[in-house]
Structure formats: C-alpha cells, structure tokens
Image 1: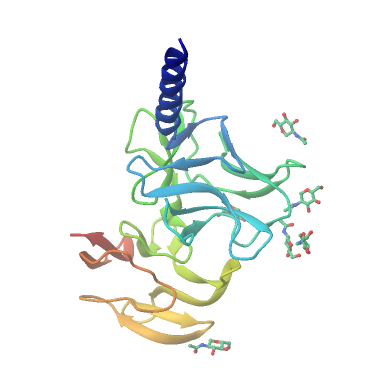
Image 2: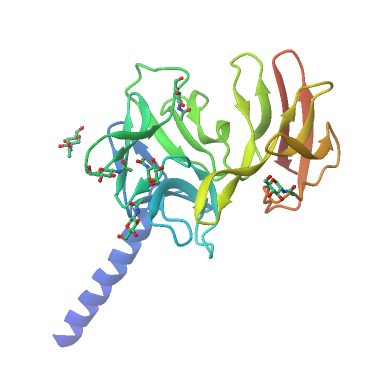
Length: 250
Ligand SMILES: *[C@@H]1O[C@H](CO)[C@@H](O)[C@H](O)[C@H]1NC(C)=O
Ligand SMILES: *[C@@H]1O[C@H](CO)[C@@H](O)[C@H](O)[C@H]1NC(C)=O
Ligand SMILES: *[C@@H]1O[C@H](CO)[C@@H](O)[C@H](O)[C@H]1NC(C)=O
Ligand SMILES: *[C@@H]1O[C@H](CO)[C@@H](O)[C@H](O)[C@H]1NC(C)=O
Ligand SMILES: *[C@@H]1O[C@H](CO)[C@@H](O)[C@H](O)[C@H]1NC(C)=O
Ligand SMILES: *[C@@H]1O[C@H](CO)[C@@H](O)[C@H](O)[C@H]1NC(C)=O
C-alpha cells in the first residue's frame, strides 16, 4: 500500500513536470495579457519575452532575451525610453495592438503601432525562433500586422533590415544602450546614411565614426552590434522601394 502511494506520488510528480514543460507557450491571443513573472518562449526554445530588470536597475522593461542564457542577454526592449519605475507592468494584447500599462493605474506606458488595423478577431502575438515578436493573423501566417524587427534596439539579428522603407517612411536603425543598467538610447547608432550613395555608418551623436560601406563581406565589430552566428551572409538592397542592409544565415 505504501509502495502504491509512493508510485502514485511519483507519477503525479512526473506528470506535473511534463505538463509544466508542455504549457510553456509561444503566443497569446487577443485580450490575453502577460504580467510580471510570466513569459512566452519561442517554439524551439531560442528566445523568451517578458518583463525584466537590467543590471542593478529597479526599473522594469518589457523585452526579448535569449532563453536560458546567463548572464541575461537582452536583444530587444519595448519601453526602452519609458521605464516602469518600481511598478509592475502588464502587457495587454488589444485590437489596438500590444499595449504596455502601469499595473496599478492602467495608464499606457508604451504601445505598438500597427500600421494596418484589422477587423480580424483571430490575431495572435507570437515570439518566433528568430527573435521576432509578431502580431499576425492566426489563419494567415503571412499577414504580419506588426513586428519587433521593424523597431530594433541594440541588436541586429538575422532577418532584420537596417535602413529605410521608402514607401512607408519607416527607418530602422540599431542603437546602443546608455549603460548596462539603462537600455535607453546611448551614443552609438548603426544606420544607413543616405547622403550620397547610401552606406552603412556607425555614428556617435552626429559624428560618423565608422563607415562600413555599402556592400560585401562586412563584419560588424562596433560596440553596438552583437552577432552570435558565424555562418552569415549579407546583402545591400537599393531600389525605388527600399534601401536596406540585412543579414541572413547561410
Ligand atoms: C521613471 O523615472 C524616470 C527618472 O525618474 C523618469 O524620467 C521616467 O519618466 C519615469 N517613467 C515613467 C514611465 O514615468
Ligand atoms: C504607476 O502608478 C503608480 C501609482 O500611481 C505610480 O506611483 C508610478 O509612478 C507609475 N509608474 C509609471 C511607470 O508610470
Ligand atoms: C525605486 O525604489 C528604490 C528603493 O525603494 C529607490 O531607491 C528608487 O529611487 C526608486 N526609483 C524611482 C525611479 O522611483
Ligand atoms: C484596468 O483595466 C481593466 C480592464 O481594462 C480593469 O478590469 C481593471 O479594473 C483596471 N484596473 C485599474 C487599477 O484601474
Ligand atoms: C506610435 O505613433 C505615435 C503617433 O504617430 C507616435 O507618437 C509614437 O511614438 C508611436 N509609438 C511607437 C511605439 O512607435
Ligand atoms: C562619443 O561621444 C561621447 C560624447 O561626446 C564621448 O565621450 C566619447 O568618447 C565618444 N566615443 C567615441 C568612440 O568617439
């Protein structure tokens, strides 16, 4: 009898472990939210998204980091210029997009701007294994309404584009944190300089400190860019719709 109890306990313990692993989610649906302590983990276990406090800071941010990598390596921050000071935030997924609110007052601290609104009630917000947090149509994988890759922080990941969308006017650049405790914009920025023939530059304020040139075989070694892949290719695209530099694996 005693043995049976132990066996039952053991099975329920195993089951709870299995359930715990299988309930780790990579997406939320409309009207769901993420609170402090809750996270989403990308399907292949590469990236995690949720609330964090950088370094010795008391401020809370919503962002994306490498799952299970120590020390905490953050690749994207939503409210980098608007920290939650000593308060817990809640990330809500509404038909306006992702909205970060002060948990005690409900006041909006940050929100994603969806360029295209949708009547669709089947939207999902999902963290992908590329590190991209996307809001998309749950039925149509290609209908991306918003993506964090359009608003890089200090990390340039494969699949991101550095540069300009000439149709929407969206400009994507990568900028350093102010310090390890403060993800707000620091001195350094990598972007496309469109004066003359477009090229990738790294600036310190208004001063260009590195010109990476427009194309080929570039290795970013600036303080602002952390690359974790070795097999990378890059391309420089310049046409009437877009000017961008990007990286891809392979
Ligand atoms: C948090 O505190 C800093 C410094 O005191 C302030 O600049 C910032 O606006 C505050 N953040 C919010 C969301 O109120
Ligand atoms: C959140 O609300 C509390 C209570 O009103 C306030 O003390 C705090 O400064 C607010 N935090 C932010 C980041 O707005
Ligand atoms: C947050 O709380 C800590 C300790 O209570 C305090 O030292 C710090 O000044 C507070 N920060 C803000 C921005 O209110
Ligand atoms: C925040 O908003 C939700 C619904 O939007 C509501 O249920 C909740 O009571 C609000 N909390 C505060 C503190 O206003
Ligand atoms: C959203 O759009 C408004 C108005 O165009 C702008 O002020 C705000 O900074 C944008 N927010 C983000 C997160 O891009
Ligand atoms: C960038 O600018 C800051 C402020 O002007 C300066 O302190 C720093 O030394 C500069 N860094 C480089 C690499 O030029």
